[in-house]
Image: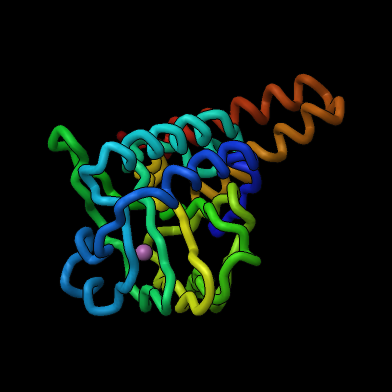
Length: 225
Ligand code: NI
């Protein structure tokens, strides 16, 4: 499921993050990829060990925690502390697939089910930089307002087009979902969305209750940890 969720961060939050990021020390983005990724990746990142990455990453996670639609779509079990990247001067990232298993601090591992990109630069401030996601329905070009997020299956081939003017700044991270299968997650998300709509439209409370039971019992069958 490819899903755009607007306004994860408001304008004030984006401005505050950007002020810190624009003054930060960046490092070569190839630090965090294997040999396949390193051949096609040309960008900058905040170093993984940077205290600023931890501070801003926590702010992003806190903002996500306040968004019920993000939670309903991802059903997160584990989330990688967000990283921050910067593409400029022709920077790009050619077609690749994200690593399947990542290490978390403390020795735990995360299976990447869902890839997330939170845009932190306004689209008119740079040329290029589209996130291009290839799936069975073709190629999707994504370039969102600052503060918006795109989530998509980590199994997808994807790339970032060269940035030919300005700078594209974003946060990116991965989620291991309680529900591994993308098709099942989508069904649960659609069911959840319908239940919320029915609740607001004064549908029969008994029917809403029954559907809510179906939702939780499906989640009970499909959730793994
Ligand atoms: Ni990627």
